[in-house]
Length: 509
Image (spheres, rainbow, N blue to C red):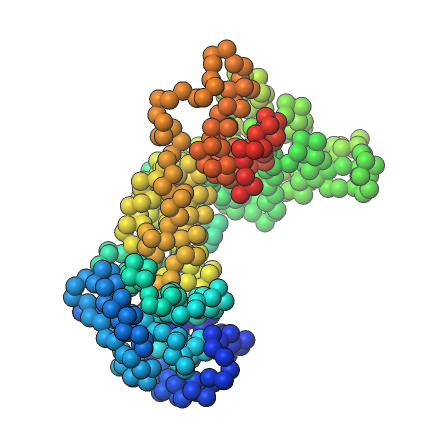
């Protein structure tokens, strides 16, 4: 773990950190700082590992040394060594000698505070992993210590289990996969994958992108439909033009027509000026109609006319406006089933599906899960300034056991949370959000059990209400998680929850 990157150096030169001790101790602190100033600056961003793990304890309490010994054996094995130092000066001398894979520093020394830790960081000291202990840890202390790159702050004397969990982050016992720096520097809009199903998608994009054909993209929520639409635009002759996207499920029905086609002044109450719609704004470019399967039949008819006539009319206007726009549509719904149910126009379907691309679910993409995990971890680590250099194999194993109902969007969310919870140079399975990854996939729990209250005599709306209520129960009322499981936009789910009077089953999370 590197202590010379990011927040520490910036704090020492700029705003400075808030000390955990009173100003009266600054004289003693300055003497300790003089010892720190003599430390050589390390050029290596990651501390070198030693053959026998060694942990340095700088703490006046003998009980702390005993706790560190037990925690070190639990985390690093019996061969690990613990070197206690009862005085700060002795501890700093030993720290300067190097070779430590972990350091436990007490802030109960009169001269020890976060300003001392900050000087250690800015001087280039590479202790490997720094854990702080304090008799009275505070929230402000933990926040400031985290900004300096400290692995953790524990109450003194440290709890063996908590300390062992922190020391595991500097252990070489677990096999890791190094991160590629290009993942952090690459194009965030680039689709990533090497599975046969995704390679076929890439080939299809390469064939249809140069044309002006309308494309229909099918796939579950979170599979990357907009990313593919942007790739089609970027590789087309319209790349210099605008790419305009609109989520048809996220906008109320009474406003969607105005958003698409614009409106004239006075067209309806509140229309105080002319508005240019998304279709016009996409002139000589590409328009993405996302979640088109959630659109009403009346608006579908107007979309069909715009595609056929290549002209539109603003709401409240009579002028026919020519448009030169390539349309890409996307949906998570089965449109052929919707046609059979009478909720989607067959003529519009054939107009949209000149070329159809079907995106696979994340759980069906095999090794792509590992590639995407490395990509997102690298990008999040760079964004949040985390010194992550590798990912533990156990992380990939946990990910391959998960069903990923939210697909790539869920993976991006999980990796972002894991990176924020990490401290050291290796992302561990301990950093993963267990509440999300350990939850049973839809259909796994209570397999074979009937839906409570279900009867074949119920109408479709009643069955839908029961199903939404059950999903909300299983995810603890989490609306975001429920929308991913149900495969609908969150706004659609919110509308259904209100329609069916299920507000008490849902949370705003």
